[in-house]
Image (tube, rainbow, N blue to C red):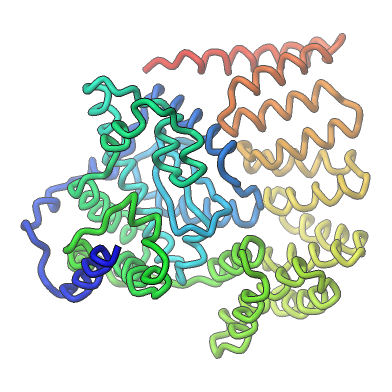
Length: 473
């Protein structure tokens, strides 16, 4: 372990040195930003995500999911890719890790958000993983494994990429070690991902130097000298000259970029406050941020204190802080939701509903607001009012797992069993679990009774999903 850290710090010492081996990657053309995912790979990706749901704590918090998706969308808009191909998934785990799974599925851990101090730094990791997708690194490695007669199943891939106990639980004893060796990123693949990732990052308008800064911050963090190497470095090996090459390449990209945004600071504060492992330590951190000279940092610190109060039971204090923060920016969705959550926790559900209703009136089709408002309506015993809110959200975001789960709850509480199972089927479908989705549709059919329209709708959806079990290019 000590030798590995010596290599890290030697890498820091040569930051200003030119990259070794020339610049043969400069020949990467426009095709480097093209995403190709076959039907077979999409099926493997769905199974991979289904397994991830069973092994990891995937986050469904709408503000966090939407925030990560927003950054992902900003990056993918520079790619040649069909809508819906790339998926972004956020995991409640303090490990500093992220990876590109099969079928264009990008998995990111909350530890990355906690460590990346700017949006550009977090985006640099996402861009690197997107580059692995555009360069088809995982499919190329899977094909190499197949040629050596090593079966590359979603379970084995999940075990290798997830790592730790969660990964071990998904790996079969046979062929796991052999496939792990086959799926190790080569130095060439990492260099390609760095080069193409920087191109994606810069083209999307982010500071390209953020990639080198983020890796440097990980290397210099004394926590990893005492404990162990970040998980991200195990799945993405750091060679002697990698940081130097990243910095050298970044210098060739446009530097006119905005690295910091208020939305990311609030996103980071929410992730830390809701999923951080040490609430008391986080409160001290947020209190320090609250006193910062930069207004955006101070506001993020105050927002973190609001959510921390919800974890520690300081509900009235959270309401007071949330009221003052929202007064500064009445339309900020983080502040609106934070105040509504605080009011609900303090037992004032009526005012929480009123607040969200007023916000929804200004932006009727906002799927994030719809999710929080519908959830509170259902909890208040008003599922009939929640349904149109959910439907409005689904018109804007038709692939929201969270909204379909809420729809299933609302329909169920209204006694509409067939519709409830139909919505639940979509939730499982979007979670990658096609088999369970079909089972829920079968149950829905059993309760459809004499409704010809509902029966036809459920039957047609069953046929569509069944056809996906036989992917054809």
